[in-house]
Image 1 (cartoon, rainbow, N blue to C red):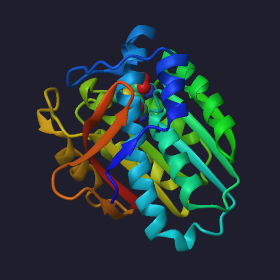
Image 2 (cartoon, rainbow, N blue to C red):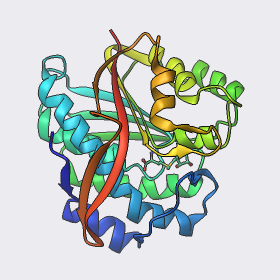
Image 3 (cartoon, rainbow, N blue to C red):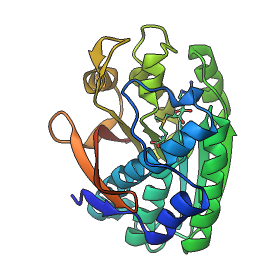
Image 4 (tube, rainbow, N blue to C red):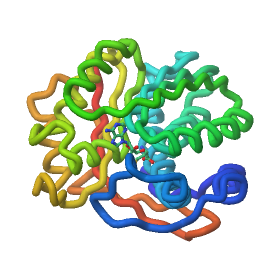
Length: 267
Ligand SMILES: C[S@@+](CC[C@H](N)C(=O)[O-])C[C@H]1O[C@@H](n2cnc3c(N)ncnc32)[C@H](O)[C@@H]1O
């Protein structure tokens, strides 16, 4: 799998020049849901490129090696839970545009509880739409999920025919904030959204690999516990405990990101 990526020049200019993002790393157990615009601009300059790289590499690999079911499709629908500034959505779109030439339309629903992040995401998507030869229909869902009740409402209102459902580095915030009290957040989120996939659709869960001080557990261990006894089939995952991806852009050469990921197929 390719794990080293350079941010396309037009995307680099979009985030660092047009939107004035900053490169600035934060501590672990951070909760972006509470951040204001200034913090979110630091997020855009630091974590957007990392999520872009992780998503681009994983989807590129998946589409190349599992292309049989995807090569004839003309449209893809995507739901992102906790999209933030949407680096992973742009990474996926780049992988689609390079590996699935028949795709002409991508329908996106991007959910997040942080309005500042969603505003920046929409501005990024204006530029992405003008650069890719794909029609991108993007709907943001400014929704904050405070507890299991909110999750059950969301489950009852979202469509149930997505090709792809993703969540990048968002479930860790549910753990830190104990949104589902002491229940396993990976389990609740994966079980809520698996029925929302088309048969043959995929769910990609990506998260940080730190020890969470609230749950007092390593997050990849929690992720695996949450997915055990689960109906979806894990068809790709990081080897070992975590996987390193490298992203180069105008503010940092070979910036490292370390994540755990599981790609689940709905059969
Ligand atoms: C660390 S950021 C990741 C953003 C994006 N997925 C990425 O990889 O760049 C986590 C995102 O989850 C969102 N989030 C966290 N808790 C949430 C909640 N309870 N309801 C809705 N969104 C939430 C935050 O607002 C934030 O944008």
